[in-house]
Image (cartoon, rainbow, N blue to C red; front, side, top):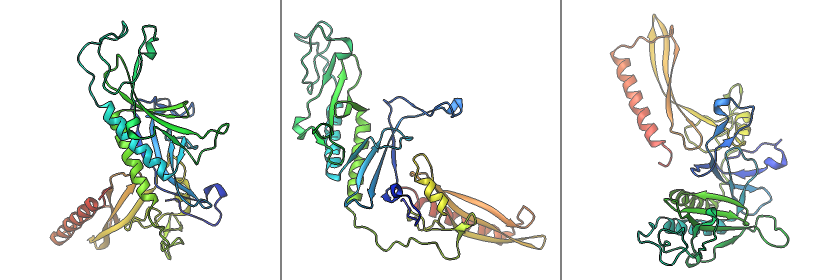
Length: 333
């Protein structure tokens, strides 16, 4: 989805998939800084995932960004590492969804009022600080719980690692899934979010294994312009999109920017006071899985349209066709 041009900087010479964004309900909102309007200074926290392959790399990497505004990846992992992470996330979600036992604790410290969940492997002590009174899960049955990140720079001879654990404070209503990078940076997820992330990772792993498309034309579309500039083929390969100019494509490379896809669907001619005109219908959609929508525009005439019975029937038929097209163009269909 990157698009390539002769004057690309070296850092931009890469293949890059469309981003996948998922909200993080347990993370603090992202502060955009003082330059942002006061009422819009903070945006919901989200994890951004995408496939990236630089031109000198043999395989794509699956990259994770901690928030929608980040330019540096939090984690870069190979397909096998992402698949292992997905397996651990599903296993952790299964444990985290196990309800707390109703029976009281037997022989535990004074502060523990209920028994440990079946997955807890912690030894609780009376002198535990309040924040340390936590149940921690054991994922050994799911295989190795540490994932060596081969694409990350090693620190003092030790590889960067990811670890997945389950934790629940003794006064919390539900357990959380924790993804920890080298015992420092941490990502907290609800069980549902852990399953969602696992599904996204597995889908990207599958995409990373697809055969490269060598027949996609990447040159200006003859006779087509957008905003007065030559139009290039849609990098998302949407068959109904008329294309984008170079500025639109290069700006979309930056996190947080969107790309507006648009293409003509049909046109209904009419005549008003002897002046010909038409009702032009196009379909448009923003990137990131947004629902496509139809756009109607009156061309010619005097700003309005005089429709006789035939024109009304043609307009109804055109709108029904557009509705069918919209339903078929929905993300995931």
